[in-house]
Length: 310
Image 1 (tube, rainbow, N blue to C red):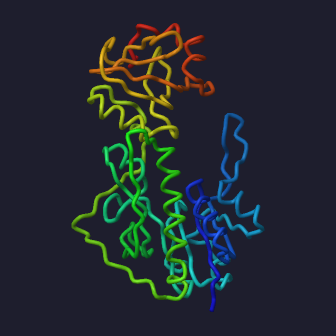
Image 2: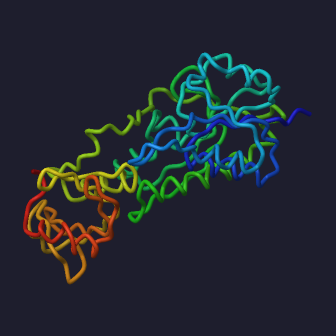
Image 3: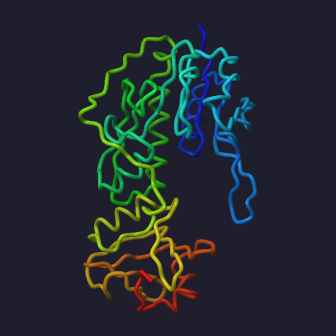
């Protein structure tokens, strides 16, 4: 039986899935990723996490700029199955039709909820306490294919986008390994989604990254967590962006919404409507990320008693 698999994915969450497949001795014959991109202040080319892992295991890597027109290696691979997770490009029908048992996707929500580009971040932003990974059949529509299986994931108040992505990657790995034999044997059953229940998780925009201090403290905290640690939600102070990378919230006394304060000797903080945002890690525009105490020893000291937003 043909058990050849093409894996398509780009960031760390996808690398976690690829690692789970490798640990299960899956026969990965090709990894498809986004091309290397410039990163950092020096603009050096950086390969993605899936490419790094694939090369470590001797798996050929194909990184087309536009897979909708450049996909011959997929056709040449003679794969039984394509598995995708957070690849980052629209996959053309010719690719979907290439493997014997089609193409499946691991999507970061319990479909049909949160179709679209940012299901993990939007679940946090909306205050959900439960989400999960869905194993779905890929088709031309945006996350509209039938769903075969789901791995639930609990969302706690301590979760940020960073921690939830890690949980989701682990869940996706368990899910694909559990169902791999059925997929390769062509025995997997896919249940059509209820389109009337569908919701959409829009991509995180630049406008989304500015923290809206007019909202309730709970809503502010959810927005910060949804953006933490990447790309990082920010407030403005002295005309500069300050990204709030690691934050805790404590209800109680406040110096006023958006007012920067010192809590104890080493804790940089910002007032909320009904409490205090404890800023454990921040990043001033153009500078590296810093812990609270280090920031207070520098720029943070000059911001005390000033209000965010200007």
